[in-house]
Image (cartoon, rainbow, N blue to C red; front, side, top):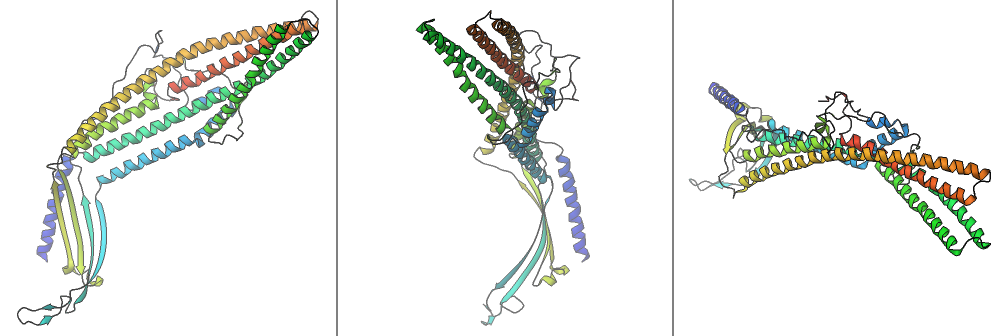
Length: 488
């Protein structure tokens, strides 16, 4: 009994020593370490000089959509963030990536399994070669006997060369990429809700103005018809007015169609069926934010979630090279077993029935038809592809900001021009109305001026929708909110 204990102690000491050596070797990991890709640092977004860095940078709030000061808009945004189907899908994909990372991290630890078995066997009788007589089987003199066993197995594959570490690193990159993709999607959904709401309220107002313009055009047509009936104008005058009325009247169904389709789009963005009735703000309640970003911090590019997602994909691809290399070099595994075997379960605890073993395995693939090397080269090529995608994402980010700055400036000017034009036409209409009331202007003149004024109002609303949508696009191009983040 003493010799048995000494043997176990010596073996355990050797196993502990071997494990210490393995853990020391595990401090390194094969494959290249991740290096953050370089990003361009231009002095301006556009061909005109626009400074990227400024001490007057105002951090964008995380709930930046509240800058529009519309409770109705805030409710719609929050509803979309909660119920949008695409966000639900992206959230589930993030959970999948998180669990895959956790599952891979489990390989850092030993695998422990317990098992028990019971075998009933009949070996029949056997003939003795010395006596020529039939003798019973080995089961205590009986041909039928049972064997019971129970044991505990421990298996461990030490991550000596860091292959599992690289695998975890790769999966963690995919997890982080999924997280940033979700953030990018949320910003996109918010932007789409704001732009759709702005489109809806302007189409709603355009529809009202178009109906009024149609009514004025019809009155003018009726007047021309009366004049034509008594011979005061020609058939050409009547046909011209009929054509003008048809053009104005034709705008109404087109605007109504776009308005209804815009409402359908808003409902789906908010996770509702098209027939649902949502509370949408009025044109007076939705204003251009007074705190639009006037300067852009130099580190803004790193805050865009799509750029962060692309960077994490580079990290994941880089780690896969280490995984491929680890599959080429030798693998080491350690396993141990302790258990007992007896004819009855009650006898398993007897010392003489117990058994144990320790095994150290070293395996090296000698030939695999070039598969392992090809996988390493594929991983390297995938890294190049990820770097190319990262560069494309960064350049697209710069393009988004440049396009938005151009659009914001030009559409603002267009809106101001359309606003001033509508204000001027409103004055003309009011003056003409006053002249008509006093008998100094004819009804056709008043109706013509009214149609011009209503047309100017429609143009103003269209320009306002574009400008309002540009403001949301600016927030999106800057990566949404980053309140509290460093601005350098």
